[in-house]
Length: 535
Image 1 (cartoon, one colour):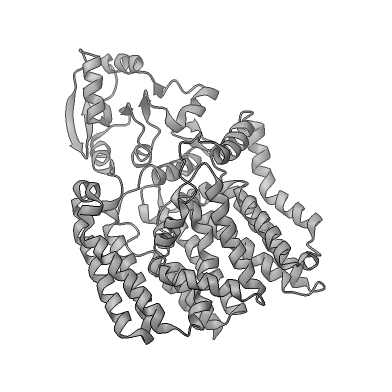
Image 2: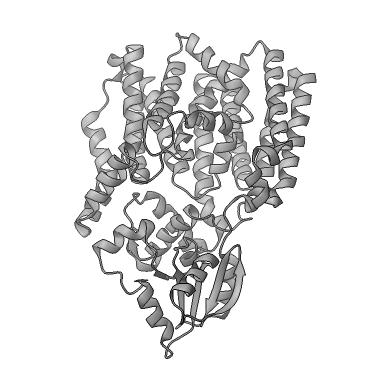
């Protein structure tokens, strides 16, 4: 029976996360970047040194790239739904693991509800459909925490204790291969804080450190060694710049105030936000439950660790969502003040609906630049008002109503997603792919478009644009395709060659024309402020 529930839940989650998975082009810059790197791995056969548009790229380790590369070999890089399928699988695994832990330690109902809460939380759902590393590393961190806690529940003489500890070490290693030593910075201190606060030091042993560390190194070390041997510059860029300086300085220009993740957490947990404060308080008061303390410290450390960082992005907070989902589910199953919570949810829905109705006042730049979103905003207002009203007049069905609110919000966001992201180059690239010949060149003028090499299925020539490609151009010769304005003009004047397909922002092309009076071009097409030109 339990296996049947697990199988049904898995099917529901995969279907839910996969809804309209390919209804939009690759979002730039992230999705374009994290598809192009594995695409180049497949083309070159070099699965050790990550490259972006042919340039060495050492910001992240390769496990996620390898997963995407497998999908590319099967489906091709131009299939957006297939590229996002890897993230969907990770998201479903995270929910299923949360279900299993909740079912084991809190009961079947808590386990099932925690998976529903996690999957319908707006931030978790949105990131389950975005090709970035954060969902993958969040799930691996989650599996690591679950494995560690489960290991401690077995007697020291049990073979299962050793197996679960080995699973913990393996998850640590896979997390390091996904997003670096940040994985250890989340898992390690949280476990230490939990052991100190609960005085459970003696329960940690045996932790099978010698064989566990050997397993960790067997998984995590080979790529780091191989890439270092092939690229002497790797260690400084990867460990010093992308780990230490990223966290301690503003080198990546991602500084946000210390409180940045608090509103992100509250908005990201919609529609379950109104239950979050009381769930945390309830878990804190129940000192007899070591799992409650474990989940509180886990989520609290994630929030504190990233809040102290000088580099903040919205997805960083994702590892806090699984433990908080379990705490909410456990609170809700034993909730006594249902009417009070129903009023709280109704009040939240009313506030959200009012914000949506007056969105033109609160977010004038949003409605001005993305007028196509208005119908979806008003649809969400109807959802919030309807669910809020139902909860107020039928409090005993609060959980079902909140689930409907979460699912409905997710569906609306899916349908609205093509209008929410930055405009894609795909309409212009389709023209290039339709008419170009093998000897033609594709050129990105004064900007580097992350989706251009993906959709053209080749490395493109880039004129006077470095950005995150800057480092790679300093450690090897990339002058054949990373060129200057002078080299571009020389190429432009050559007649005995294929056609030049040039894409750039209209403002930058106009500025380029003013700087070079003799530069004449023909506009083939334009879209969203970008021009496709040729000689």
